[in-house]
Length: 332
Image (cartoon, rainbow, N blue to C red; front, side):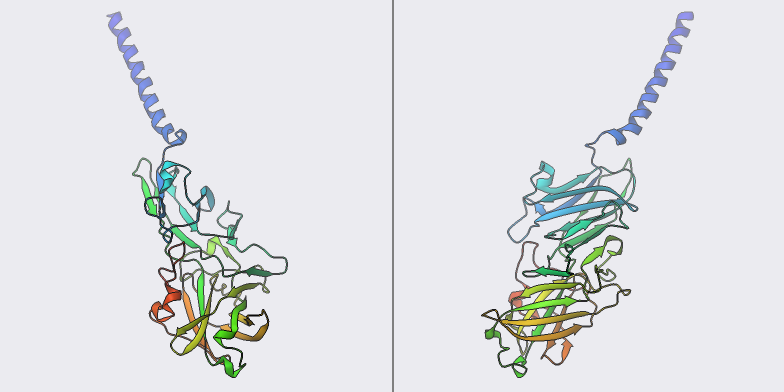
């Protein structure tokens, strides 16, 4: 009888120890197995089995926030050979249960990121300039942004979000010119090598907390005197009876608090590098993220061109591919 009681006590304690270990292992599995993936961002344009010269991204930056605090981040560049999963376009993370905000950026070029540890303080934008002039040989980087809001449960199924990167963060302004020879006989397409644009009233950086969607996102500027300067190569017959045109990419319009319209100072340069004429123009329309605004001018009057189909604008320019996959999804 004593032997039976002794065995019963032993079995009872063994069961207690086993139950404790089981509970402990379940609670600790999540905390200590670093290779446990419960969240994946799939990027088709980083998948080695899908990418082409036209269908790919050059770089990717991922920031995952738990409320206002940066929880995880990851950056990689083409050809994305860091590991076998990344080669197939999968960017894996292990997150604690909760709700998150994920920001994915691609083709960022010279865009800088600052103070990313806090979503409230985080910004991205053009490299700061001592003289408040931001010069680009061509146009601003046509980088893309994808925002998702995953909810992670544990235990729970693997959560997968797809970042297509088919829409631009920057907005595009297309300007068509006609009858400029009435201002100056030399202002013809054949005489113009390039047009230097100095834009004011456009953003030079973006607060992460104000990055929402293509309609409501507004940018900011380091100072009220910021100028974005770029060279634009003209092209013929952009639209109907307009003789030539140019276009450039800009941050979305400033917030209402800053309240400045976008103004363009356009200096027409001949093939010898000499200035022919300077033309000024205000763009009173709000430039949204991933939007294209079409305007036409004769040097005196400026009007918004109501183009319902982007193919109406010089189709060779609109459809010209780039490594981010072209200008898919034009418009808001």
